[in-house]
Length: 323
Ligand code: ADP
Image (cartoon, rainbow, N blue to C red):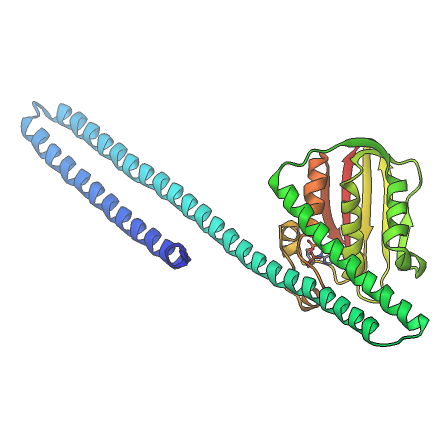
């Protein structure tokens, strides 16, 4: 609605106008200073008692003139630098706002799509069940698929609710001493059993690596990282989840051999609603909330999450917590 007032072109035009006007005033002030000094020199020459005192007075006048010119130019430069800094901050804030708006629009589109798809699928499965006389295996297969769609729907809603509760800032952590390896192993077999059985997901978590984590929230970190690694790996994929202790630090890493993430996007993928613009990501389902949730929870635990390139290709996400 207010776009035409916040457009970058207007900002640049205002900045250029101020710059030109300011430069013009500076030139004018320096010229006036020169003219004033010339007039003072003329008067001093008329009133000087002797040549030696005239030289001293003229030197003093020139020194003063130089100092004043320096002051005008110096203050002008500082003002312009501050102006430039202010404009660049405003421009950056505008760009972030535009990006956020675009991400939010994409989010609504993909959530709408992700809500409608399972609902339509379940509806079709129920209609088929109601209308047709099916044998037992076909009936069980339809019911199984309907349950899967329902579970997906549930997981999506949970993710959106979790992100919005994080956003409200009311979340309190309840950290408890936890065997991280046990937690990771249990999550892998509960949520990613098929990938583990197919050898796509390898868990390397020697027992006894303990950390203080919130047992309700921290699983979201593990699930989101593994889900992404499997989703963005392509086929054949191999995802390796590792838990280890390094001194007082506890490390959880999830490595995949997918397409990886461009350097320019490494920070942005943790933003709320951000999804990479590349085609393979666009084709996969997602909301842009997973890594936002991961980062929020890890930071709330006093930890760090980072992403690096895997070799020969892919990504490694690493979470570091202090024991
Ligand atoms: P979503 O997966 O729902 O899009 P996320 O917040 O989990 O949202 O991820 C944000 C973006 O980060 C993804 O859209 C994708 O572009 C990128 N990304 C996340 N994990 C990986 C990964 N393991 N490999 C490549 N890209 C990834």
